[in-house]
Amino acid sequence: MNSPYQLVATNVPFTMPVMPLYQSPSSRVIAELERYFQLEAGAIVGPKRYREIARARQIGYWILYRLKHQSSMQIGRAFKRDHSSVLQGMRLIDYLKDREPWIADAIEEIPENIGW
Image 1: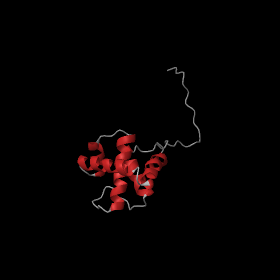
Image 2: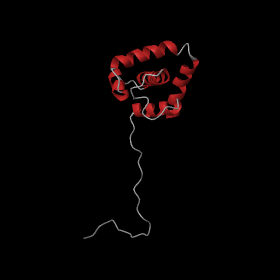
Image 3: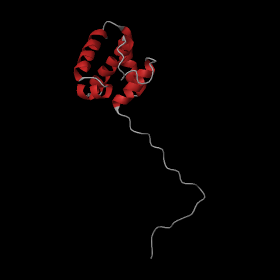
């Protein structure tokens, strides 16, 4: 059998290229929120309602809704919250971002840290 291809043996070991696993936008935001606000792992999607955790969570809602155009249902599923909680949190961040400079800073810096 004549083939235009020729196999050549080499001493170089074959390695599979390492591909990064796909991360959804919501999982990237949740991880960055926990890093940015120095929260323990799982705090953002957990049941605690402390103000610091709730504000971080609400900023995440706002980022995903405004920048990634995810629905409140999708965001709620990712954060283990009801869609009405997501809508209320986004309304609150819309109100507070003009009054609290640290919220406006977080809204700018978190997407930059993710690379968006």
